Length: 273
Image (cartoon, rainbow, N blue to C red; front, side, top):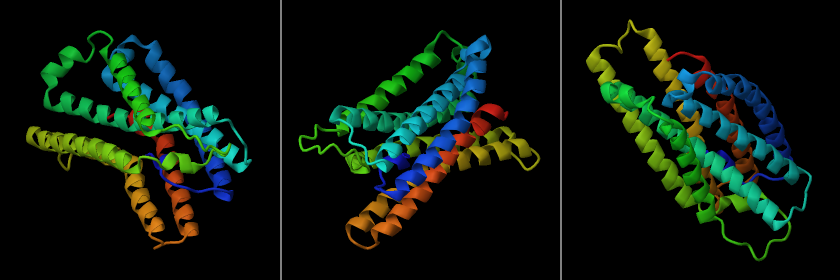
């Protein structure tokens, strides 16, 4: 899913490329996680605010996804023979962490929508109790249900844990991504309309325009790979493109997705809205 890590089928040498990309991205993101998430946990005002708690969950989800992606692609590169339970565990972590990235981005968009369009209600509830953390736990639980509903016991498992195991339920994944995308687009349209109505979004307010442009670009890099991978898979299955072309495109898309995880702290955590 953008989840780009769950729809392509690159093997062999491309697994080595994915390993290096995911490992470098994981190292960069780990540095940002230590700084930003420690600050959020340490500061009472931040850890009780939904916006920053969701940033915390987004960074953790991305870190887990890139870390497991590095392990998964490395064992493919080594032609390892993990047990069936180990393979299923890796796939479950990959799909659930990728799903939680999408769910958290959707929750962040809804949070901004409530803050802009319903400010009075938002200010009275955004710091109430521990509900922001409970929301993060809820998204993780939903994300965990997704791979459990897609993965079926493979009685013919041949001790080869490849990307073929990640291809199951592609249509369901696209429906899930499409639903989240529609919600995100709806919230951003409403935010733009409300901002124009209040007069805060104009040519003079360049900071606000840059923020919306940055967030839009960040979301596009997260979401668009999924919509590109799915037609690539269809074209490959209908023999309209060669396997080499599909694998190369999949690696480029995966690299773009990994870079998006690295710049997420800059967009959501280090830069003021």
